[in-house]
Length: 343
Ligand code: SAH
Ligand code: SF4
Image 1 (tube, rainbow, N blue to C red):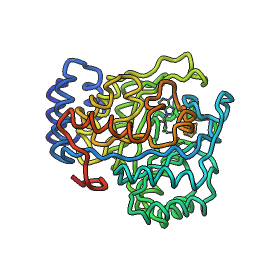
Image 2: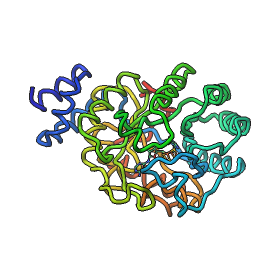
Image 3: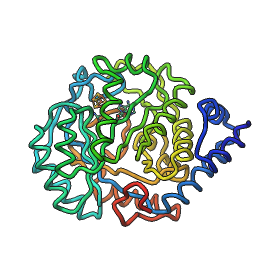
């Protein structure tokens, strides 16, 4: 079948084989048609509301050494920080006053907060009536359970790539299978599970991306966040070209066709490579934006990759900008907490 027929089939049946996905990804003739199909599926299944999640970057301290990431422990060009629990709560209070209903707590993967400390923070945020998404990397089952028992609702842990050889190469000392096990543990514990991948990693092929998409489907991910790999001069991948914006939008659109009712963010990395990146993503399947509410002086140190947007913008301005984007395409900010299936 030709790409256009496959897009129609996916829109109707929400299923494709790996080779069918590759036919769509390789062929740029029908991109507008693909984006429109993903936009229609998004509208039908999750509606016109865009969910805003306030992102707090708790700490840039990381014990891992992922080759693409500026937070990697071997990067000595980065001043490290860790928010105090009071600073976290101040950012939460500001986010709530701006109207956010979900707080995302993200950090490098390290023992930035003792489990009891994290539990206290989660409990305090839940007491404010907010939903919580965590993105703290690989933890033990016991830690995931303690966070869940304290009230955490969702967890984001990208698989990054399902090509195990590339995974091994880019993640020294880490184990692909442990990452899959973490995703399984999160599911067992009743979290809404988010995963995702990087698009345009060195050596990564379209076949790999097709497998990534099928992996999201196989584990029935509740959220999928993906974006282009952005080359960072402070990492071993400094000489490698960044991934392509267009290809990451295409992968995202196919994810929407295959997983019609999930939450899909228009990611910061997309906007960092293209000035209208999030607007384009919202019109090609995305229904979530995660504006940064971290205090500006810390935000500038959470440098996963260069050119990250919004480093100088206040929490208020950041939200205004996002609301403008949403309104400019006749969408609106959703009024519920945006669990999977919430319209
Ligand atoms: N430490 C946690 C969360 C913080 S990193 C974790 O790794 O899960 C959050 C995401 O940033 C990662 O999942 C990765 O996909 C993305 N990221 C890191 N470096 C990047 C780069 N150079 N370009 C694009 N995305 C990057
Ligand atoms: Fe650490 Fe996450 Fe960056 Fe890997 S991607 S180095 S775990 S912050």
